[in-house]
Image (cartoon, rainbow over all chains, first blue to last red; front, side, top):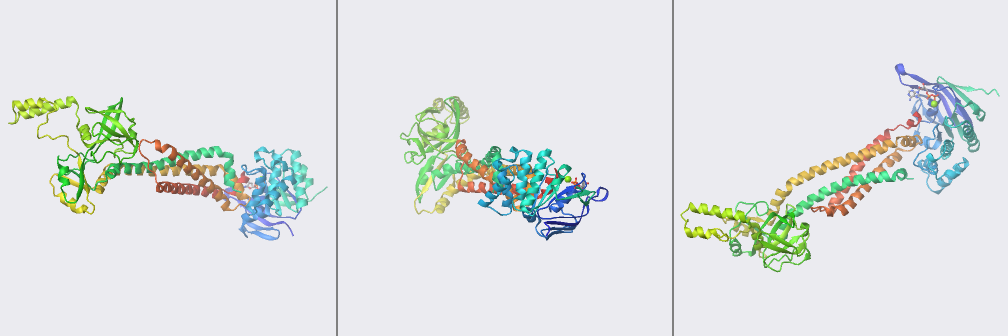
Length: 230
Length: 402
Ligand SMILES: Nc1ncnc2c1ncn2[C@@H]1O[C@H](COP(=O)(O)OP(=O)(O)O)[C@@H](O)[C@H]1O
Ligand SMILES: [Mg+2]
């Protein structure tokens, strides 16, 4: 079964003169343990697709399924989208987007709390994830005290915490130098392999494409699978 | 995990300072109520203390507090002879302003009827009741007179032998208690020049009458001489105490047939005072208080709204991560309630420490504390609602805008 499945998504912004067709019949799938790259020029609709898949910005037409469950159909929610977001989808963005007034450890634990998980095992889980991502020594610090790369690792730990089937990452390495960017991409691969999560990453960095199992390219709202040559 | 608290721990100082500022506002709202209650209590203090059944005053006046009243000599004795009357005593009071020890002192002189009343029932905090019917006074401590201090009033010099606490006139001036005769003497006193002018006036009026004679003229040259028609300084009122079992109404109705007096019950006297002195203050203070409550409400709303706006990004992120609305509501509401609770706490502390230093009494009962507490609760809840409405409108996609 696919972790994520999108079929024939359409999304239009504005109307009349300012109308922009950001998605024009986009379909894609991501399997458990698969790392998927989304390439494409700026303005081609990558973020629109990702936020659509993330149930933040529902496309007006098409179907989205998570682990075989239909969650969106022609713009209509099939269930509580917020609940699906907090339990089924992990988000990572270009900027780390941690809560500044929570410590690193609390930021990770927060997502468990939002899923009504409290108590000692949430502490252990947060600590375990932070160590898994190599920032176990930073748990008591606040986000502003961390480097950009460390912040992204914490954000990934947070995305992983509820063990979602899908992680969506929009240009997560854009603010990092190429070495740290590569390290983060490899982390995604490790997470996918070891946790069985499907990871969809929007990226501009062609030098890290070897990390991915599948590559899609977006152009003017149309998605095309890139066949690997190498 | 209480997000509201976690957020606040990084801004403890500014939050506390904000709460302190609000506390000052709430303290003023409290003070307004306390000052009004103080006014009411002060206004009726003397009437209550005298505890008379009936107040007999000059015909058609509303004396002795609301209006000047003088009663004829001998009224006391006429009243004592009435059926149902246990005792009657003359009463005089007026506010005077005199220079004492280099400062101008406003005081309310009150007569005590020697020998029954030596001031033993007054709330004395230092010294003793009167022992001598002449040249001794008890002074309220709000006048800042010292025990044993000499107090020159009129031609006499009095000694402060006791200090009372909280004995103020309806105008808020500290009371000075002397025996009734001393009090009348103090109140009737005129400066020598005034007396000379008065004497000359009498002489010239005398010259216009058939009473004018050399002997009368010579008599009037003595400044202590008073023509027989001019009695000694009159009292302002006579207080009547009834025998147990006597009917207040029948005694009062009997007295009302007298042509020279008007009779008030203690309650009517109290009403006169409250109406005259307090009614306007009540409106004034009430309006001011309402205004302050509105101002506090606006301030709290702005504070909480701005605190919410400052967290716009974090709230958007919470929503993006799938937080329920209740998580966002609690984040704002908890901070609002905490702000209110801390502000009110500061207000209580201020009330305890600062209000006793006020020149007039600030009387706060449990009703006042509960009332203002509720007001604060309602204000912060409404203010939080404004923040919450704003917070719920923040779109989660705001995060993605960059
Ligand atoms: N909220 C929006 N309102 C109107 N137009 C939008 C909005 N978001 C994106 N667009 C437009 O949709 C197109 C796709 O944008 P986006 O998905 O952000 O592309 P990418 O992420 O590939 O740069 C662009 O033309 C962009 O201007
Ligand atoms: Mg984009």
